[in-house]
Image (cartoon, rainbow, N blue to C red; front, side):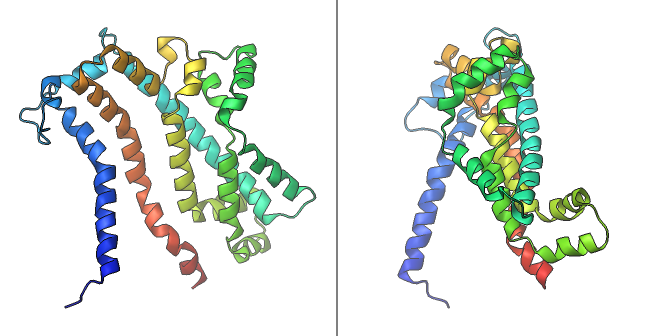
Length: 279
């Protein structure tokens, strides 16, 4: 029988505490979304609902005024987050490929300039960006919500660092076979960078799914608001109905859970990509 050492026991205790700390708010959100508000505030808290109060979800989707604007708002978030994720992956992977596998004058300077933009907080450029978008007449539009986030400096940095370790033998062999550089990118680079692309896609999607500040400036009409703005408005109006508030938060979390679990296999298999190809 294997004996567990003291450091091993401590590591397991810390891991268990961390899991409880992370999972407790999520479990509370799920259980509270199925309870009436009167049960949520009772002490001690009942973690398993006595009766399922599904009216919370109906109220969350219908809204306080019964307009069902929630559906349009969550659709807006899906459009913005999806477009930004796709463009971030494409532009970052192309730029990262150029910065990691080609030698040309000014390459390192370009990379340093991209890195420097990461040091500038968004709040510092928010007002100039808002003025530009307003001058372009893109307020209350998908273009206005998406345009400032098409290029992601962190994404470029991440893909460049990942592609530096990509074996040059694959690229050289493709060139010998007569493939163009774009064909190499599409048929060699993209299929073999799944873990990095999946991670970048999730980060880009989540950054826009949670984005509150920029839509607050750009989306003035109810029709163009995104899900964070809906949650803020709904919780302000329904601050005494905790069950409906939890139902809104739970529904808003579902797309992120789906995306994460859909791409989770890439995280697990990522460590074995290069070793298996070199073998």
